[in-house]
Length: 52
Image (cartoon, rainbow, N blue to C red; front, side):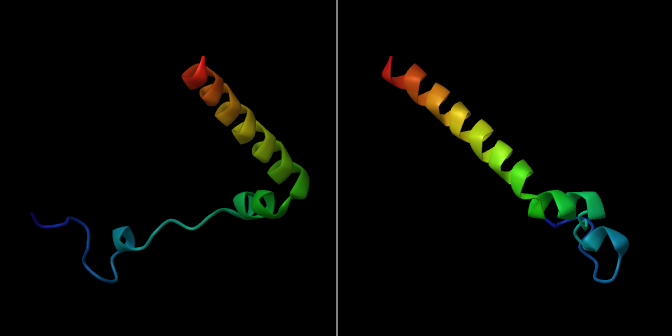
């Protein structure tokens, strides 16, 4: 199978770049801590279901 949109130097060839807001949220420590907690709670919930 041939890949589509893989011609070099066409706009579809380049990956999307994060917006300034996205880049700032990646550096914002309170947001990282919140996401860390949310992901850990999801993992705990999943483990409780599997060991229940």
